[in-house]
Length: 428
View 1: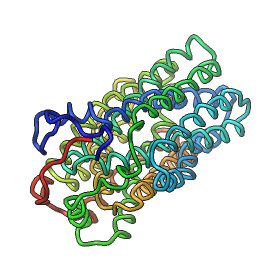
View 2: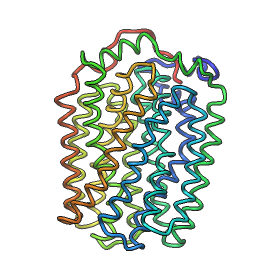
View 3: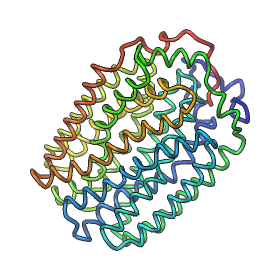
């Protein structure tokens, strides 16, 4: 690629180069990840503010579950569309437009005064926010060398987890001192900042660069990743695995603040702290988890991640104090840090170069459907058997995701020996 994306010679690293992480951070890929931090902070604020606002409106458990499920449903409704648009007009304009619209719909949420209006506003806000999924993943999945692909995608996920956790933690503290609506109005500015930074990051990216990033090495890698199966097999396996992972993730976002406040009778600040710890631990481990996948192979890291995720949700369910909640958070975050970069990279490298953003959008649709089902399932199980039982249901989903990886993902050697191709390209 050209247009400012190549690094100087000192930044060009091979698969085992000691400067790989530094080069990645200093590249356009790193700039894109950094630009999205402000938007993700806004998402974290929403994730702590809206459950507590619904509680103040005296919504029932089922109403809370259905309303918070709009986060996932909005992503499901729009993610494939954003990928389709990006494949045709490029990365920059759709991503900038989505962030401006995201800020506008946060203002709509701040003005909503009923459960129905909050649900509608959350659906539209999440639909705009989700553009980063197919667009940023497609850019990283095609611009980065195969030997850094899971690490780069993990860096994007780490940004999401860390910044949203900081937003939730800050939101929990702010709610103790300011009205929730005032916090929402302030958070609407953050996606606008991201939109401005995206303009700067992609100012020299041409349409030709967008189309020409796939190499012969990547084509060979795609065939290896599919394990002899076709595109449809990869889609179906990914659909099942990602759906199950995200059922737990969506349920955690919706119900963990309520587990802390309603079940343990702690404060909103404690709920925010729990969300912050979940994100900090998970974010800190995502890049090492992606590196483990690049070095050890996708399948073993996915299996281990599913098992740890299930263990974390089981500890949540048994928690009788804040300390055990933190143990559950650490286990769940460790599991996600292993399974998520591996699953995302496996899917990204199994897709053809043409319509790559669209396929990454489909991957996001599987995520979004899980995020949608998670709060609904959690709210239903909560109403039937208590909030702790909801976390047991999420543990079963994590265990099933690991089982799918064990049975359906093709085993192969670690990446450094799987493909013999061209020399390592620069980090993009």
